[in-house]
Length: 476
Image (cartoon, rainbow, N blue to C red; front, side):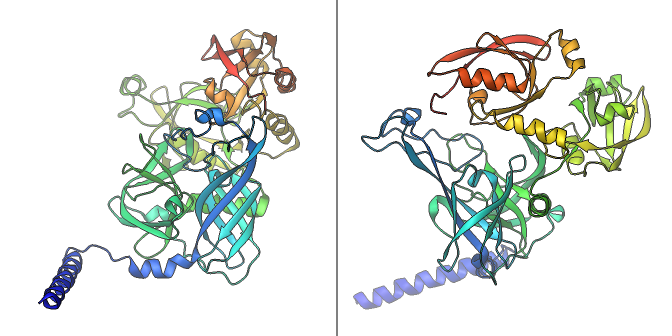
């Protein structure tokens, strides 16, 4: 009797499973089994390590809990110091993420934040081989990194066209959430061309595919098994998946990867303008039918836009015929133009539409000619502050009515400057009551500050002067 009951139970479970499968097929739900079987061998697990100063007080002392990341960067968890390890000693900081092979000779794509600052990068393949990887290059602006392992005949993934994605389309992800290799999750495309804070150069793909720590850097597939994106970020208030994930379009990622492989750096176009959104009231005042485009609020007098005759109050409506839907669209359209190339801008000026050709310059944070390379070298040495700065031009000094100052170009979100509230575009005029008139002077003042104490930093923002308290880590 017991055996009969067991057989009936098994038969019932099999019947329910078969019915569920048939119902899914009848409803047109996708079957990802073949996709996973074909793609899994080319998806890899990435572990990177680096030695960092012990700062267990960041986590409430030994045994404290990690502070959850709110928006991006799932990885790079710092572990509390073991008992007896004092302040100042080094410890291993480990990042776990995913990646995928794009060439048989060992090129691998992942996220820049997965390998940021790594001293060693290990790639584990589907067949359990572990290979040490070389970092070919990384671009923080798009969060794309290119790795290379010494191997031949590796399995690769087919790359698709992310421009063809449609909202509502089924997609799937393969990665290593929490270290569980080759885990598969699926969902739909929720939105396309999303612009996120501090990510002006990436038109993100938004999905509801479950992405958790460890998935970052892994591939996003369409139903044809083609890679259409790199899973990069989530939006969360808990530190875990809440239904909103973001992927870098593969078209953007491959453009960055090609530049990193061929040139070792990424070059972006630059107009030299400060832009703002066009509100409904502003659109009406400019004689526009609807609020769209990017309004030029200010220009770098030496920048390409000013040299070509653009002026404050112009509204850029199109770039080479492509609509500028909002002010957040413009940096992306210009950034993908190679420096030195011409673009045709469609403008609204004095209520009339006109065209203007502009030769796009090189984005100031990019290495290029000797002058910009020297500027970047000086900026890179501001690592203790967690920012990069550049000389302030004479016109800006005159506008602010100051004699010195340096302009903040970029801010590391995990650095001391970000913690103090410093933003790109701010003009630093003094630190610890000492005047700052050059990047080199800022470096000298920073190096002279010792001890774990807050120091006053004076800056100009939007034409107004204010002070912030800056606290530097004495171990850095």
